[in-house]
Every structure is written in structure tokens, then in C-alpha cells.
Amino acid sequence: MASKSVVLSGIQPTGTLHIGNYFGAVKNYVALQEQYECFYSIVDYHAITVEHDPQELRKNTIEMALDLLACGLDPQKCTLFVQSQVPEHTELSWILSAVASYGDLQRMTQFKEKGEGQEFVSCGLFTYPVLQAADILIYKASKVPVGEDQIQHIELARRIARRFNSRFGETFPEPEVLLTEAPRVMSPADPTRKMSKSLGPKHYIALTEPEESIREKIKTAVTDIGPRTPEKSPGVANLFLLLKLTAPQEIYEQFESDYATGTLKYEPLKRAVADYLVKMLEPIRARRAQLKESDVREILHEGARRARAVARQTLEEARERIGVGKLLP
Ligand code: TRP
Image (cartoon, rainbow, N blue to C red):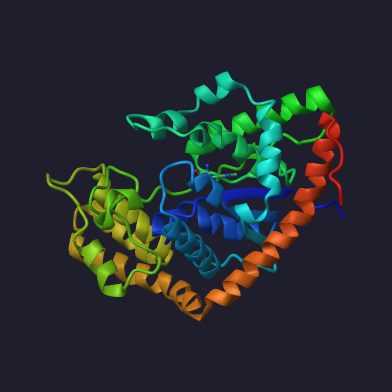
């Protein structure tokens, strides 16, 4: 049997996940583990490239692992680990920095955006995409499930792989972006913007949000100001999107047809969205409540052990290729 393609993705330890993260990425990670050899890394070393609080980082890393496991990442089917527990990533990153173009890094949109207007911009923020390339290449991953905002970074990883291969011999496959059509869930309080934690608590619904609070956020979600048009307003479209993602198809279609005939009232629509969302989140909540922090730590340690076994081999190979040879045992 042909061996499965390797998938890798990195997730910033932002603390708790929200439903935008779930529908936009995590749900897909869960599906991919059935089909591919998947590595999922909580990228704590990327998180330190902007100012951060060490206590928060520690807490957020565990919270992220808890949420991911609650969503259905299965340590029997995928390798979930914390990036800094596989120090080979950072060593490979240094090696790759020798074949990463300074000019390319200067063109990275995320660097420009995150650095803009800051009085201090770290060198780590600049080389962030090189570490990301190392995350991917160290597992010789061929597929990387990410959102559109990361395409530029994956392109860069391809260029890095290509330059390494041409200078030192075929070592790394060029990774491809695995763009699945991920729904973009918008903020209930400002449906012209993507759901995000950084906008503030009114703008996202956490996976672990208490039921009352979910209902309140949906109830007060922005809909229309003006008269109804054939084209849905962003807020109404967002409610329909959530309904589509959570409710049985007949229910969704009924609301669509009510909208089309102009008989739809927003109150029952919102009630349905809240009901189905609460229902969908229930098993995630239940799984999360069952997970003990000590079990999660054990899962992450086991994940790091598995990841390291692969990472060490690739690193050895890269070291050999560039002429620094073997480490002493
Ligand atoms: N830069 C990615 C983000 O902001 C996170 C990330 C780090 C990543 N390493 C990765 C994504 C490797 C995919 C593959 O979302």
C-alpha cells in the first residue's frame, strides 16, 4: 500500500477557539485525520514574535490543546504536539534561513501588517515565515491546510524547499496549500468583519461559551437597517450561514424560501440559529468537560515524541547535506 500523504498545519495558541475557527479550520483538520498522516502543531514559538505574557502563553497553549481535542482531533489518528517541544523545528529554521531570500521576507504581507505602526518590531517577526517553512518541511509534508491569508507563506516555503534542493540535492518535497472552501463566519456585532477574538467579546462566540451568552449574542446580532432586498445584508447572510452549518437541510431550506417570498421574520430565524448552534456545540462541551489537564499534557508529550522521531531524521539529513555532519550522540 502506498504510504499516506503527510499533512501539517500550525495553530497559534490564541486561547479558546471560537466558532469561526471551528468552521473555518478545525472541522477540516478533524476530517483530514481520517485520510492523511496528519501533524498538528500548536505553534508557541511563533506566538513570541510579538509582545506576549508568559503566563498567558502557558495557559493558552493548554487551552488550545483542550479545545482541539474536544473538537475531535484524535491522538490515535493524528499527531498533536506543541512546537517548542520539538526543538528540531528551530534548528532546521536556522538552516533554512540560509536559503530564504531577504527580499522575499520583506514582501510578506503578514509581516508588514503586524509590524505596521509598532515602535518595536522583532527580528523574529521578520523570520517567522522561515520557522513556518521548517514546521512544514521537517515532516516532508506535501499538503498544508490553511486559510487564504497564509498562501504567501506556503509559497515561500516552496521557494525555500526548491532552493535548498537545487543547492544541496533533493531533500524536501514542495508543499501545497490545501484550500478547502472554508466558510467565513462573520462577527455577530459587525457582520462586515470576520469573527475574531481581537475585536472583543461581542465579536465572537467561543466554543465553550455558556448557552445564555450564545443566545444573547445571536439575539442581538446585527441584521438589516433598511428594507429587505433580494440580496441578503451581511448580518442576515451570516445568520443563514450559521443555520446552514448547524441545522438539518430542510429547516435551512424552509428559512431560505421564507426569505425569498418576503415572509421571513428575523426573530424565529435567530431563535433557530441559537437552538441549532447550542445543540451542535453540546458534544464538544461535553468532551471538553471530560478531558483532564493531566491527560492533555500526556497526549502532547506523546505527540512530541512521535513528531521528534520524524523531525530528527529530517534534521540529520539536512545537516549532512549542508556539510555540518552528525551531532555527537
Ligand atoms: N502562520 C500560521 C497562522 O498564522 C500558523 C502556522 C505556523 C502554520 N506554522 C505553520 C500554518 C505551518 C501552517 C503550517 O495561521
